[in-house]
Length: 403
Ligand SMILES: [Fe+2]
Image (cartoon, rainbow, N blue to C red; front, top):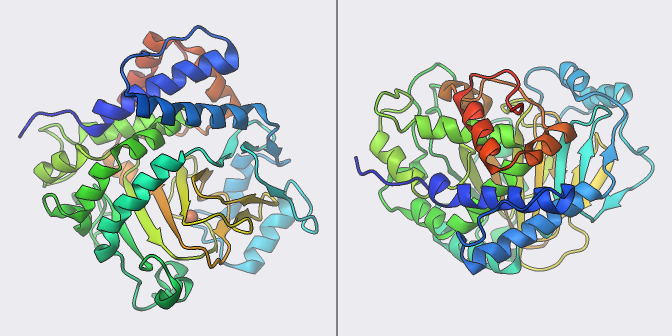
């Protein structure tokens, strides 16, 4: 097998270091410890945009709900769908939103959503992707057009229901979805501990899926870098789990050559990316996620639409969903959806399914992201962050951020 660095090691790690170094200085007045000369000018520009938006999200007052996310998770059940109005009404009566239902609150500035204990349920990061980076992804997405498919029938869930896709006659992009997944269970083998495989879109050597990922490697690395500071436990736990799959003794997948090839162009510590074109998203919860893990959603619209919203009714808030917005969210706990629109758009949804993370065996600990973890992570200088990262990846720790 050809020995070569994965994209995570070759690009994303440098960006993670840069973001953490700059943010710890900017927000908490610790010394700069980022490697100033290791990134291209273009990447530095993308990073500086991300730093400015994350810093603003941190310094702006959070939206706070007056309940504890652990209690909330206990109440919503093990595999919530978020689609039953009666169930959701009952949940909302016990766990009221931050703002009363009759007040239509729309937020457009970077911020975060907290519970009363300081756990961070979501980061809202509008405009964090530069226009140049957005243009790169839009251009690359054309490679995926032949792979985009509208489900041809509903299997009872909204995800496979074609009615949520726009009519192709009125669209700039072909409506549909393609899943780019290095590791998941084959259909019919869900959760049984059998070896994981890549999605069909990534099995072909240098196929369209792989070409797309290669062309958006900087975009992916920025996403990975953002995750490394807004949820270091998830990012580094996932990074370690993915890299361990490449070891000769790993039995997670039988097709290690395929995984090795994909990991050279896979720049985040998530285990999947859905590229979704021209679809509305009804209110839902992602029941297959782990309680404490973020999904990360990126909206890429063709033009400005001031009416496009991503909605979190359990929080009582709607966010303006402009192009280049990132919403990182506890997708299982926080019910969410995106309004119907006539704006042409892609959604890029990065995810890690709980069963897959369990199969990888690298992310067994539950560390809900919090204000305390954010500050603690950025209080570490670079050598201590590396030590903490290695402990997180080794999964043999109890208090991973204590040095
Ligand atoms: Fe979702």
